[in-house]
Amino acid sequence: MRKAPLSLSSVLVLALAVGCGGEQNSPANSGWSQDLGDPTGQPLRRTETLSELDQPPAPLTGTTTTPPTEKRVRHDVMIAKDAPHAATCSCLAVVVGAPGDPRLTWQAQVPKLGGDVAVVAVSAKGVPCPGMAEDAPQRPSIAAVEQEGADVVLTIEELSPGRPQASGAVVPRPGPGGAVYVKPKGPKVPYGRPAAGAGARCKVQ
Image (cartoon, rainbow, N blue to C red; front, side):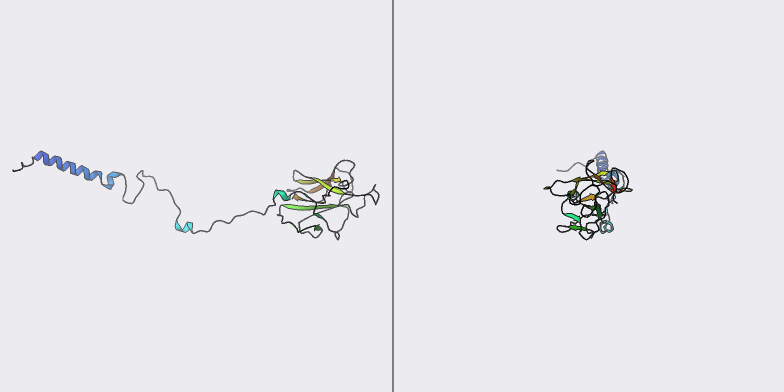
């Protein structure tokens, strides 16, 4: 059986169909470039290069700080026996220093503290106290530590016998322009007033 020859119109339709299919698959008309660019035309997001990934991390900076649990009144630090016990304030010798200050003595190992604190110790031994008999029991104890602006203020009380005496404290360092002060707890306590002159508190350092 002989096949009928294709008409001229059929040949033209077939040629147009093949031509359209080729254009649809071409990179130019698909929206994608051959270099794998973004079809939206936006620049690619910047990523790290190998040289940047090879750079060492930036070092951490900061100062050593003392845990809050160490900033407290303490019973295990006092003024050393060989240290001067001159009156810093009324009826009281006061030392302010670093944990390893030779004027201080610890009952156990010196704790590891940061540079953001100071150690304060108080004593009435060998310190003259006008109005009190020489054989009268003198038990000054740190009752509280407060921050008033840039200042650090320690309140001193007369401790009754049988109670553990708080002879020292780890306190925050005063702020710019501030200082360490002591003051008596109540008008009947002889400790912590200025050694000379009037005032509610005595500047130590």
